[in-house]
Image (cartoon, rainbow over all chains, first blue to last red; front, side):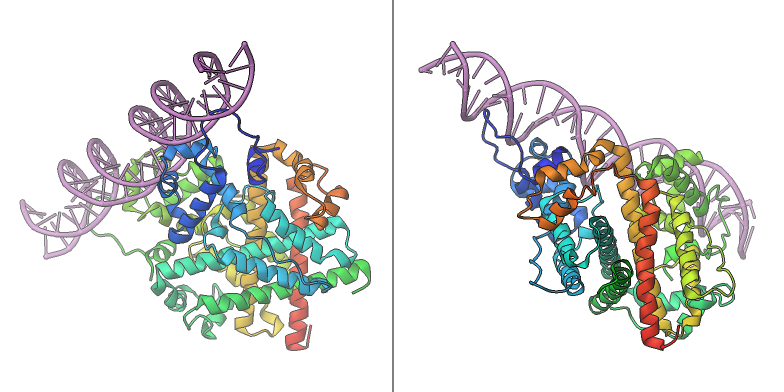
Length: 243
Length: 243
DNA sequence: CCCCTACTGCGTATTAGATACGCTAAATAG
DNA sequence: CTATTTAGCGTATCTAATACGCAGTAGGGG
């Protein structure tokens, strides 16, 4: 079993000799998460994390193999456990509930979506979310393999949407003028002969108003999600012949 | 207009005095892309790019403001222009064609999906893709605003799927054993009382075979895409009452 | 009860990378 | 022809990851 997976599940072997550790990998992960919450992912350096814990930089390396491993631990630890699905709801209600839960959980850590993806989900929290989404599909009659495909697709969409909206929001707070000028900038650069469809959008004034993120992102998220779920509904009907 | 947008469109002001530049921002961008293609995004440092161009590191800063700006330029330059959509096809055929084109274009640069997203599309190549997808929806009767929402959602899904599959593929080549053991690792860690739906998936043996990426990713991509398009079809019918 | 040894904390040093600063030289406007 | 603008680049600084080895700690076997 990979070392990082063992760490996330708390399966390290019991210590025997030597001094008591003054730190655990969980402490380090928690401190890194707090630091990222407060100052962004860019502020997470081994030195800053150690400082926050009152230890030296190199002490951390006794507990995590590398910074990359720390990032993997953060990927799991930053997610809370999902709320259990309401009893007896249909798959669509269940997945909508699930997606809203993912959105809520990830919103608490704006840096979450810029973490590198290191592999398929393996930590306890990630697997709990995975299980929860699979559970929502329990009554559909899909094969287990199809359920996995559907949930992977859904996770991809949700993560992508979150990443996009968080990155745009970050760019927006960094440099609001660039966004308020977006429509005007495009207008100066788009040639209607070259990009006619885009020119029509500009003419219609879609980008004229300032893009506001906090309000629009929920609506966009839900819009795309409902499209996906509409498609899933058609797929389930096609495959199983029942609702 | 932001400086990077002007650079991408070649709108820098004409030079007058001083020595002829031996480099342009495009040269630098091209060299950076070649380097990333050959050795990955991690190998792209200002020093390595300069070395490849036979210039000193600091010379690059006369042409790009920072490495971040260089990454933005790469985001646009790495995409080729889209093939024009076939004439007279319906929106669904058009978007399927478009998505396949995106996939093809991005596959040529495996690092593409790990570039940070800096803002809404603004470069000539990105906008050409944007225009192409909007054009596919021209006959649907959707409002311009709805088209933008649909295309944004689609881009999000496509980018997310690509990012996920490329990151997993990278993890796979780094460490193939972790992947072949994935099912076995999960089996050791998943408690059927805690994660019953996931346990059923494991029992069904879904993760028992080695995950192969090159073949499966196309199928997964298409599966999710068709779900989204099924949903879009329902949406279009609902909104416009026509096909 | 003691000492061997595995283990922790950490100081130091190395390496890599981004980028500020200022010098020198090349073009060109006037 | 000369003042001005700009390119290339050497040097230096700053940040960060992390290899290495020392010193002190504590449990277990004698």
